[in-house]
Image: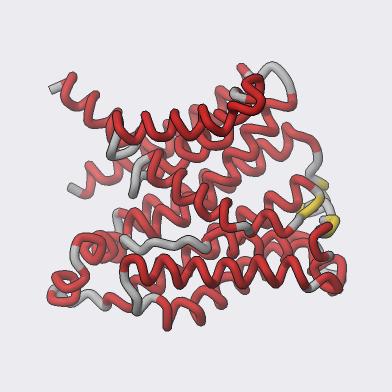
Length: 315
């Protein structure tokens, strides 16, 4: 069983690494590399939500708020505190985890729709803070963000950001896969199926849900920091409710609980709108229709459905 888990884990990482290696070879220009770099960033945030929703079964509609904490962290740190962007990113990830811990303790006592509404309220509060605290966050106009420098290497250009984001996503995927195959991951899946049964089996339900919530927040904060540094600008829109909905959609469309599904879902919602720009005013309608069709035809998500289809053909 352990051998099979290891093979599955390394197979997933190998597929992801292969895709990352092939994309620059077929990308016709730097614009496509930048789009791919955005896919890796949003896939990283979706990975955190995969741990929370796919593993632990807890719904969050405020995930973009944590992305905003990471994004504004790398902006505020250098501007107001004189910190380096890299240190600011690390501190923003820690801050996001601490806030998730403090907020998660009371709201994770809720279940189902009540939990979703509570996380929605938290996300709206953060978005309002980013919007209104002009002296610190720049208000609606946002803030300029210093370029990220790692050991004297200043990261610029689509190609460099592509590989940086790809590397961070690969590490994030490795961590998520290890969590899934660990005793904690099995405990999370147990409470996903039934919190009562998991508690009866000796799982500390409250602690496991809180740990998943903190992990999701840290993933989102790192993704937000990378997004802000790559764009060189951050606005309150990064923490908007619609981005939270998009993250949930990425996880569900790609496949709930699937690491590759989070990446595929992110690619679906980032790349497809770019491909539909020629439709102009019909773009959003066609995108919505395609999402509906995918969910009807592939109700378990793209990756699990394709995996089951291949298993049936090979059996």
